[in-house]
Length: 164
Image 1 (cartoon, rainbow, N blue to C red):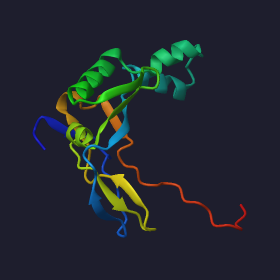
Image 2 (cartoon, rainbow, N blue to C red):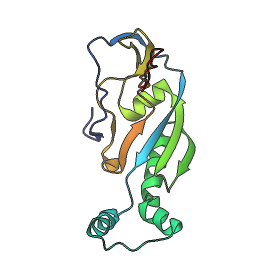
Image 3 (cartoon, helix red, strand yellow):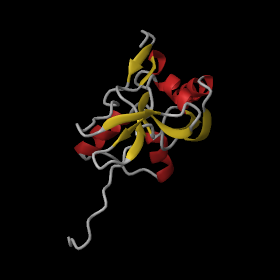
Image 4 (cartoon, rainbow, N blue to C red):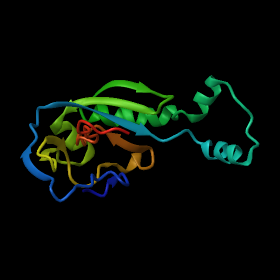
């Protein structure tokens, strides 16, 4: 990784011993990922007010403005993904999300990863990567997470007959 990139903390998938790499991903396979951008500046003050009981209720619109992303942060991330050849599918200032689409090869280059197929402990094949996601140093602290690149199944079906 070059000095111009930084890792997103906590972005490396944790694997179980039974999970194994089985095949490289098709570089031309199209996929979608979601980039989460940090909150607007000033949000920690809101948290202190809430915890102290001094917070005054606000309208839904005002709350959205308080918890949304900074337009400049969204623009910086949009510029980065477009430079990487990814398409912006959707972006939402209030939810601080930018959904992008591109090939495996473009995602690998954009996020400093190597997508490949793994098998889960129950033998199911899924797309994922090893190691942490990295981004340009200029986006350090701006990009909080990138989801959709680790497509490991999370939920497991219950076996029949169990009651809860």
